[in-house]
Amino acid sequence: MAVEKLRFEPWGVRGSFPVAKEGFLSYGGDTSCFSLLCGDSLAVFDAGSGLTALGERLERERGVRSVHILLSHAHIDHIMGLPPFLSGAGRDRTVHLYGGGSTLDAVERLAGEPYWPCSLRDSGARLHRVDPGAPFRLEGGEAGARLSSMEGTHPGGCLWYRLEYAGRSVVYFLDCEIDRERRLEMIRFARNASLLVWDASFPPGRERPGWGHSTWAQGAALAREAGAERVLMAHYARDLDDRALERLERGAAQAGDACIFAREGMEIKL
Image (cartoon, rainbow, N blue to C red; front, side, top):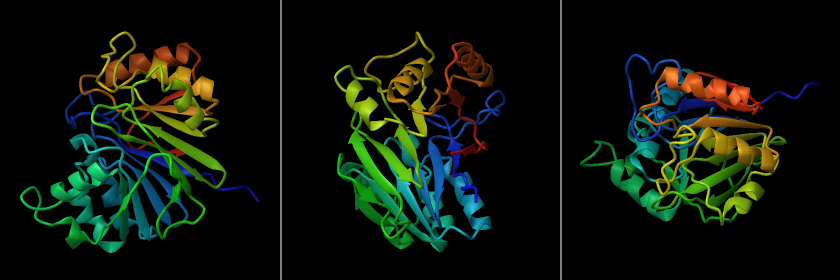
């Protein structure tokens, strides 16, 4: 019997803030949010504005019993989708939030007055503090899903995640900037990943050291060293419209790298 492939889906591919206008419709304008179905549990990487579209799908599809949201950090583009999700699709299933202590504190402030009429406590969401380097599992969810994290290189701090399930693995490197001293650690963390999700905020040659972001070329190089099967580019800057991203995607293809440029609505089979 053939093994069913896992479905990884981008729901938000932008960084900083959503953009909704002509010229940004092909790749999409929502901020960071990606999902992977693990049995009857849904693992979600970050809770940007793309979480709203995922919530709308969950309200139509009833098979997911629990949602496990892995938060990288508390910058607004990574958590702005939480309040509407928790008061919408999150009401009908168990929601677990994972992240560093300061991130969870920020989420508790955001999801409630004076910023939102419904509080985090009203939603019934359960919070789980993640300690970098300590392995953990989806709380009360799919027993076969194993997770680990490492401390990232983004200003103010962040967490990067590795999820392993059914013989496949996803490594989530948003937001990231390659630190020379941490490069080998990053390669070890991403070793033999089925899919490496990478921060491609800037075009090559337009890097901004200290901003905590990267380029597709840096991600492709690290993926090769780690032996990752595929690398998914995301977290595009707001000034990269469809034409600019198409040019970058052609450049990556010409370089012979196994890169995928994330588009909202696409599915990646693992």
